[in-house]
Length: 467
Image 1 (cartoon, rainbow, N blue to C red):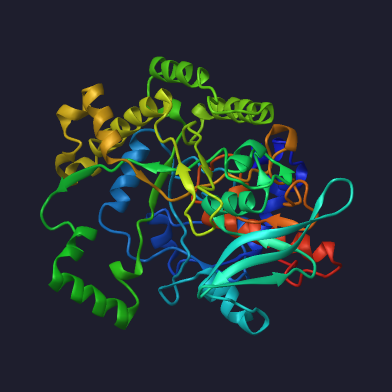
Image 2 (image 1 turned 45 degrees about the horizontal axis):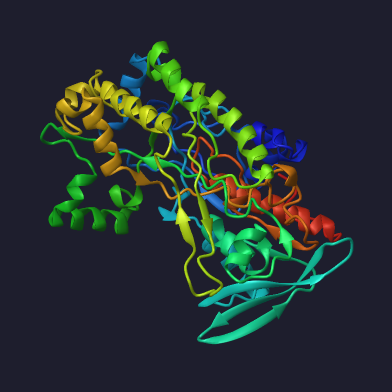
């Protein structure tokens, strides 16, 4: 959050400013046993967590037999246990607090926490698809968002905006809606037969994501893992356990995580080689000087972050495929398009297997299944394994980046789309650079902050401002 603030967004987006909104979104439920919490790394600092917010968070009670050994193996490799990864410092190994309410073993979600308690005051139009935002000229060359055009059951309808429109369609759909509304790169809009209204070349650019590389290990007989759920009898027993007690695997989710600086996982020589590759990265598809300005700034930060637990430096893009709102957007994530990313992942996979070979985790493992030892020691074979098996973590962001307009930004620190007086965006698309974290808590904080901004703008007091 420090770097997001430094990307021309001012102190309003610093860690200290956002922390109250993180806290406003949640009620942190402490573990019932402090001894269990300490043993399993399921600890937290109350100073960084909410006590009366809508989302119920806590630690799942079923963590699996490999959970504690994983912690101890990481500790043996010099990676410390982090007592609270949500404190603004997430380096180390930790048990992740989830949005599964530990008191009910049910998921706490926007539907259960925000919508249902307020459903009488909200008109929800389900089964509808937004086509575009209708803009009308305003003063000083800007526009006002007058209406939203949408389609439901084959009928095109419009809703008028009394004060503001807030777009929350996500990193894939927001660019399409903006471009169909006349906001984006004029060259791209004209090619689709759309009249350009607001010149914003950053729309749809800067797409970033998290990717995963799976590894699998054969464990000694008798060790219970999620694989046991493939046994119908075992799965039935777990389901009964969940329904009767709210415990077991159906009440759980994988919760052991570790984030470490890259230079802790590889030799200084190898880190230097990969950093050299990263420094040669360029935004090859930047067709506007404003995009190049922004990408240069982002790349300088990402290169520095090779010494921190961040992701790679690929940037893709997503745009409207045509002027037809029913066509899906054209998405090009450009995964592994930079050689530095692939080299980083090669070393990351090898480090993961190094952890697996470290006691006490090593004593639980019979064999390394995928990738096998022969693949691990061969750069070409491991590269091919990664290219074949990598997965998206489904954390896309950045396609309506909150940055200065001169750097290809789409929204300012107030979340308003540049060139439009009353259109805001409040979702992952505004985050200009990938986070070393799951996106969920940050998105709740963005929603809380956006609500506070809008209420303040229209002279309404935020009822949940006290924490």
